[in-house]
Each structure stands twice: as structure tokens, then as C-alpha cells.
Length: 261
Image (cartoon, rainbow, N blue to C red):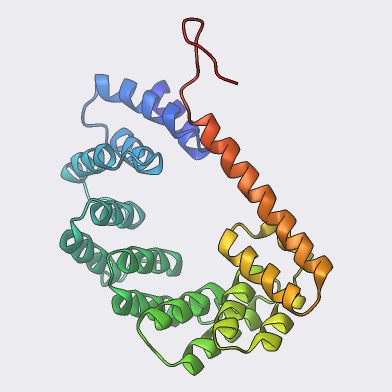
């Protein structure tokens, strides 16, 4: 095997996508029809949000041999991101009905379908995943989300979310999802009961600012001031990290530019 291809695969495996692209380009400079290099470069470009470059690489690879299901799904989602919704839907449905997708792949197909505003098809993909993996908490949670997008009754949505929590009781994201719905339905005491099992112990895993605001306000309204304060602190940490990340994206000044403090 080409040493550059080995490096390419290794860098991709550990998430260093820019380096994976660089090594893939070395491979392709010698062998423009290297299927593995084209796929890794394409997937890496998609991951770093260079969508058109990723699509181009994967389309070239597809001319050489059929793409794996996982790669076809990501290519289809990329089509959707560029506005080619019909192409995205057709490819996603082709993979979904091919009979070779795993439950995780079906859930990813559902994400792609929902992204192009096809929540009913997304829910159907979830059902297919559930048929293979009926005890999957994630399947039930996603079905609850898509059921809401499709306009199903609140009782149906609540039942799906509660089933997800039953299957994975410590998952704070499932509990926040159900609690958010209960808050909207003015069932705030029930919402707090759902959250009390994991908050504040699992607050460090919450990354949604809107969720933290909602939870902080809920506990504040019930005079649970210490818990509300901890939620506010977590929100401040997220905002600080976001600000630091945005600063890191700014061009770095060199010796010929004026640095502004």
C-alpha cells in the first residue's frame, strides 16, 4: 500500500481532516483513480464544510465503484445542503430501501430527510430502524421529534419521549426534550420532576444555550435558586467557549500588521 494512503487513512481515523486531505492529494497526484483516496478526501471535505469539493471527490469515486452506504448517505445530505433537494431525497430513499442499511444508518438517513423538509419520510426511516432495533432509546427519541414535526398528537409524542427515557434513564438530552414539551404545555411541575433526576449532576453535558435558559427559568420560578444559578453558570461557560472559538477563527496578525488589544 502507498505510504501516503496509509497516512491518509490514519489522519482521517483520528479526526485530522485537513491532513487527511493533504495526504489524499499526494496519492491522487500519482493515481487519479485511487478510490480510497477519493472517498477519504470527499468525506474530509464534507466534515470541514467544504461541501462542493467533497461532492466532487465522492462523485468521482462513485464512477469507479459503488460507494458504501454510509458514504452515499453523507453525499446525499451534502446534495441537500447545496439546495439539490430532489437529488438528496432520491439518493437517501434509494439507500433506505436497499435493505442493507444498519439502524444507525437509517437514523442518519432520517436526519438528511428532515433537513430537506421531509419529516414524514424521516419518521418512516426511524420506524425502519426501530423494526431492527426496537429497544433503541435513540430511535424512540428521534421518532418523538419527527412526530412533532409531522403534527402528531402531544400524547403520541410524549409516549415516545417517555419510552426513550425509560430505555436510557440517565440521558439528559432526552429528559430536556420531554421537559421542554411539558413546559410549553404548562405542565411545569412535571417538567421539573423529569429534570431532577439528572440536574445538576449532568449539567456539564448540556450544550444547548436555549435549553439552559429554559431550565434556569423553570427552577428560578420554583425558588430553586441554587440550581438556577448553576444552570446560569453553565450557560456562561458555553458563551465564553463560543467567544473564544470565534476569536480563534480570526486571521492571525503578523509583524507587518497592527495588533488591536
